[in-house]
Length: 237
Length: 280
Ligand SMILES: Nc1ncnc2c1ncn2[C@@H]1O[C@H](COP(=O)(O)OP(=O)(O)O)[C@@H](O)[C@H]1O
Ligand SMILES: [Mg+2]
Image (cartoon, rainbow over all chains, first blue to last red; front, side, top):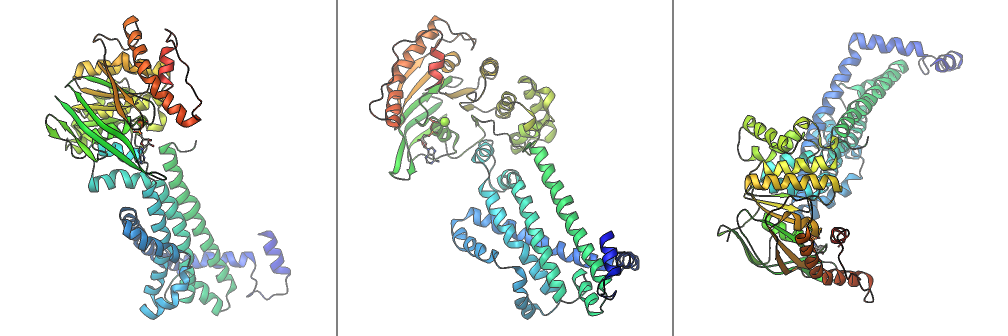
């Protein structure tokens, strides 16, 4: 940070192109206080949450169908593997044509970004449930939905969590890309308006926020979740 | 006859051969409250037989009936204890044991009470809130036995339940199992590849031949047992069973190591017969 401060002060670039550290910090803090940045964070995270929830539910349901029915595996399973390799921002032009340049279009690519990964992980999670657990449960009289709820789902939890973690990373990137290009309030949009107004301090402030949120989600939320399951299950020391 | 197994045939798909026959025309009768063991070389279809009775697999031919009623699918009147404990790692010991009870629409309170009682019976009363990974192998297996017994099944199906345990733990569990069997009068079908274990525990011992699995011989064992010490009578029986099995072991070894292999045993000594039995 000291290096940043010094290079910025010494460099020939004007302040609006390469603002100093203190300048960025003051914009960041005043942005947080005025609520401009907070509103953007709220808007972005709520999009993410909605998209992510839809993706998780879709992933579980479709993952279940692929696991359960051979015919679905041969058709949808194959399609998913193919679609998974398309970065979800590529869908954005289509989304704009379908929904217009609005929240829906962004939500669409956010959801899409997470869905494929969730499907793939749910499927492999279900497939890897040890036969032993399945036999134990059946022998004790479990079947149907009870079997799914009390054995297949909980036994896949570790894999589902790592699926969530990867899916989150995809949809987070899709969200930022979508917001940058799209409309409405949001961190990406704030970034874009910072560029348009030539406010580099705002742009860097938002970048910092994005980095912080990303780190918190990944290292705090998902890692904790993973660790707590590992501890409870006794996987690893 | 209580548990009646008639003309069971079972094959599995095989990569090269298409299908391979695992059980060939099995007939077996078991009386209510009887303790019956099946011994045989590994891969001869013992587990498959057990899963058929449990309703976890389906036979191509033949019929299994209990009290005259044909077995169709799994049911908690026949509970399996597997070689590995198979406790659910996401549940506490107590929740593992109440799992089946709650399926019987029993109230949570009643289920927990029963489960705790049963866990005390296997000397694990202090571990009800532990998670499976916090227990030793022997303790896990005791939980899995408690989980099965608490269901008060009519038939307890045990698939090499003690094979993965050390000798000492095994001896303790033998005694506990016999106590429980006497107390509850449950019918037990016990699979093992350890001849001594079979002789020390059971009233009837069924020897399986291999490839395909067939019943080769049946032995009766004396009824008073402590499940621990072999004596002259049981040693004699071990010898007879080993003689029956020798041929089967040879068959397996020849298949695996080539035709020139010959398995040499001519005597069974007091010290080694148990070990020999456990290494087939
Ligand atoms: N689900 C299965 N699919 C294909 N082959 C199987 C399956 N289960 C068991 N087998 C085969 O059937 C034979 C008997 O298995 P098993 O009953 O487990 O033997 P045992 O319990 O006596 O060791 C083995 O050769 C095994 O490879
Ligand atoms: Mg077996």
